[in-house]
Length: 420
Image 1 (cartoon, rainbow, N blue to C red):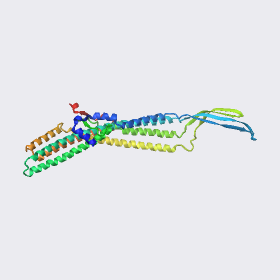
Image 2 (cartoon, rainbow, N blue to C red):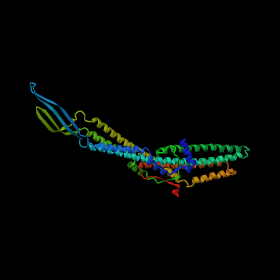
Image 3 (cartoon, rainbow, N blue to C red):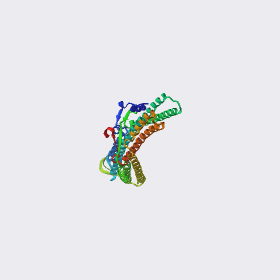
Image 4 (spheres, rainbow, N blue to C red):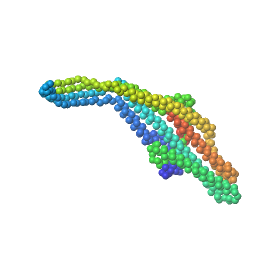
């Protein structure tokens, strides 16, 4: 009920409603969307992993203490005393291993940043689409109510007339049936606006019932570059491809790291020991230790890393083909819609509205038959819906191309005041 009241308020009381532009909605979402914090934290976590990957292992300190007894071959005690030893050991990785771990961690940061940029671009496109959906619902609701009110007023006039004969009765039933249909269309537009508003408020970090009225906006579409140009740009700039490429590069480093880990690190450190058992002995030296790679040559991890690398190569190829398909489909769809809109007269919807009003006046005077009157009202509404839906589909195709190519925006939004 709260969201429905917000939609009703946005339609019926624009003077007290938060009127915003599409670009303002986008900027607000990019600033307040709660999910952005997830991606920021992901980047911070990746940078923390980079610090850990570049850090040396901590040195180890070991100490031993005990009691020593010295006896001769007959068992006679020759002497006894304390014995102790202290050593400090530092493990040194096999050459190249640390740099490989750093490279893998750097790619984690790159992947997190690419995901963040991709989400912001997708968020802006979604918010712009939802805002325009609200604007479309507002326009459809206004047109439906306009015609429904016209039919309702006409019904009240026809009731007062002399209904002698079958024709006036049938005309009244046609008007009443049309009024019911229009009221249903108005309800559908209200529900569509409500659904878009709920998602929009969620994306911009606002309460679900926050009322918004999107001011009149005009979509200006730029000429789309040739298909081959779009495909070339997508192969370079598409976020999904860049993510797959980074994953493939990272997996290559993981294969190299798995091969490097066949050879163990070397532990080096000084030590000192002393024994007092009759005589005093002290030993100072440098110790070196390393495992012998006899039983474990890390072959399992190497095979796993190579298999993951093959999967990354396949994923990159599949993603590239998918990107090419989506770019081609959206480019063709956008061109068809632009060609369709290019055939429209700039004032076609205004002319239909004037015709609907003219038909209403002349029908009341008896100069226009009921069929012409009803048809003009319906055609006016259908023309409004066709224009708005075509622009919406063009916006979706243009924004999909922007996300796939990361290129210059193909659509801009201006208010009616800006257009003047």
